[in-house]
Length: 457
Image (cartoon, rainbow, N blue to C red):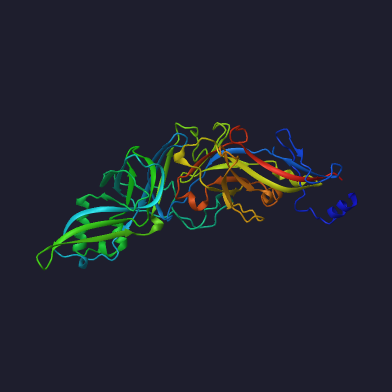
């Protein structure tokens, strides 16, 4: 057996996976699991779950929220994550509307913003929401994204210029529309927010007079820069999703040729969905996460009561740093068979905030920028699915195979860490959240299980 193993080593049979865990910060509790080998064999199967993991909650610089297909509006008061507000910004266009669209004697009856539920909600929809409509005083512009980005600026969201959760534009403090309502997000109802009639008449007159402000989109956007909807105060306790097919409707009446009163309507649609985005703010001053900000992006679990927090929209992710993985390949005569990450959910979470069914791992570079979504080449998986950790369903967990990541920790993944996050496609259009444990949390642990073969030659 000694000669066979020596020949295999000479042929680099284990060149990709030869490694062993060194420099554990905790006392090793490795155990021999036998893996079907004789007790006297020189090849031993060993399992360890004491790999050092530095766990923390991390706030991303920004999350793209434009052109996601959803308008988010409302407020949530979360005891763990603070006071969260979702505020959409958008522009409208009079494309196709001319003086020929209406009778010259037409009279404007009403104007309203028309919103259709898209089925999404997060929180308690039984409470009344008070929303207000404001006119923008600053035209929405996309940020400049030209030039070659430096490595520390690259991230998984890099690409075309877009608007983010932290983007915002000036608006007039004057309220030009308001509505109090109880959301019915799973219904087919339409929410109508009445708009100021004086403003509506000004635009209506421009249409009747064939003004170039109406016939030229750029002139119209300079004249009517856009709108934003905000939640008044801290009313309600839910973020509600609406379709991005929002419209502004003008309803008018006129006398028909038969002498009878007729009714008509004009429709202003969304100008460009690239300019429709959701500004999402979060006040965490009275929570465990007090102190986390864009200038102080990370809080270790030692400062957050042994918990990590993930939330879409505001950009919270869980950072897992395993500093000693880079030394694995320096250990001779050992080969990684399997590595699995296990992250458990803190028990007894609020039923209104159910854990998301899936998460992903983002590979972050040395600048703590997420550069790619981690894909396991053996299982072809990129998601961590929520599952029960025991037969009675009292503990839930996310698991993911990290064999490839561990094996290449001193090459491809050298000097990286992992961000546990909502799927990238959901980050900008969902407020879903989950509270996770930590390596030191007795109720919900985080650990890396490594099974390796020790070649005692």
